[in-house]
Length: 321
Ligand code: TXA
Ligand code: MG
Image (tube, rainbow, N blue to C red; front, side, top):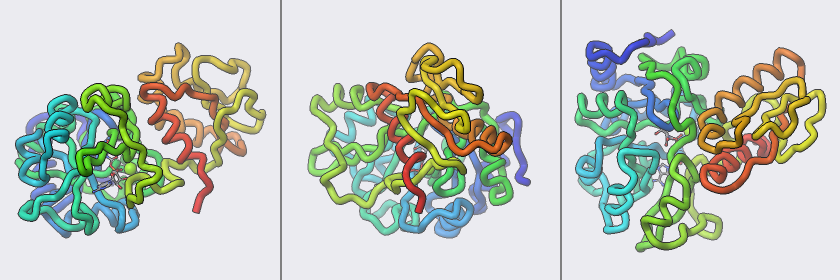
């Protein structure tokens, strides 16, 4: 098992920074989900991420930096990119931008693409780690490829424990959903993955509708159809869950069900997002313990963070490869 630090005092952070400098892997808390961090300029270190996650090599990683100034060492910023970084960084927005020829980043992090995905996380521990190293950190969500993203240090230990050197425990993630990813291409802003920053907030800043990914051919994100998958099958928009299913409820739609968890009894999407992955994990365990056949999920509204929540649920419910 890795060394799990319960506190993020200076000595522990120094230890984590030293591990990253020597090419190791550290799981760090961010405000979205826990990330599995490595030095993004080190090929071997980034390769270890793919190995630890069992991730297909074609799936590129997000680079974590302290802010726009540091990001500009690695990516080309257009005026739209500038405006988005000013509005949402530090925070849950990832920008896909042209990669600078002199970036010095490992080519593994962009999986051979000429773009990179980059964001400045808001979590103080992630920020202190980046500041201590003054290096870009490549960090995908710290789970096995295709599984549910971790929102606590215990989730990371359970999913990847044996494969990583150090886990910094920063408590539960405040947002609980991955960052929103947008790609800026010829002045247009494309939504690649809905996430912690709602579409509406981005549209206010760019003063235009976000373009849909659907008709553009992009080898993108957690764009693999089956993703975030629990062990049992998941069924969506269920009003009357069968008794041999666990039930993921929203806003108390069916209080009678026996194995029921409510994402937000008061119907608050922010709370539902924060609880989503942990609830899927718990229900998956409940299914195993009680020999249940699947997880039924109540309908969730699509506005605001609902878009990202529904996106993750659709992937969790998608047919498995
Ligand atoms: O909130 C988050 O974004 C978390 C925390 C740790 O920062 N990270 C995260 O990383 O969700 P990951 O690797 O699980 O998802 C990153 C997604 C992947 O689906 C990948 O395909 C996409 O970003 N991506 C990375 N680079 C890209 C690029 N150059 N073009 C398009 N998509 C890219
Ligand atoms: Mg992920």
